[in-house]
Length: 324
Image (cartoon, rainbow, N blue to C red; front, side, top):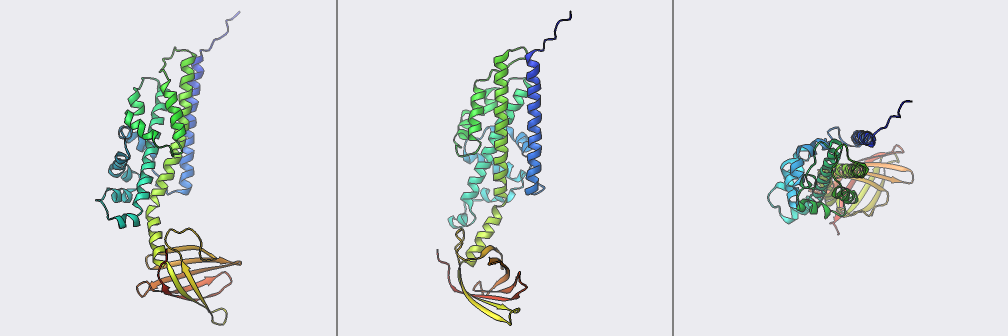
């Protein structure tokens, strides 16, 4: 009678680790593909960025150091050179800093750098668990105590809970050799699961902050345009379709950044330089106005078209300045 074949438990562990690694790779590829549908084709290769700057990310101990690394290396590497130059410039006047949204930009950069540092930690743990060819030191995994404390302070980050769970798993992990038993195997699998979760969470957070910073200049332009349009205007609409009918209105545009809609029917406002685009929707009618500033910003002149075939001229005269 033939003896039954006995399969060592470590065989299943290896299979599990391999499958987990494949799942992570597939997820990262899928997420990048989904991100590319909404983001530009030049979306950064964040895993490559993390590998390239792994040592520097591991040594970040403060927001100041994070901002410095972004300005000197990370920002230019992920197509955010304008943001890096702005933050790296000499101290700007307070008014200009507010106009350029520098405080918001700085906060977004700190969140991005924190996400990349936490992602590096998760990736390092996953690689160590998968390879098990050498046992990384605690400092290689966590960075310095100050670096770990800096990550721990980012309690509002969406990945903070996953970071805490992985830190606890790693703290209790004894790096096992191939002939070690079930307790070590359980710890390895637990650490791998937590590392995978943290990689997913930090990946999503990093892309979100990158996209926020990428659109920073557009936000500044938009607020500048809103500030220029803000105020009370005497509006005259001349409709060629309806026997040259004229409609006179008084419109009050809100201050920049005010989210409340103060003009009924105004769905979209775009101001780029001297050009203004307004889109109105009311009672099934859609109207688009294309205007230009004149008279040093005190007049607006242009044309409109609407969904009922109407077209004609639009003119506006500023009658009062911006009221906060």
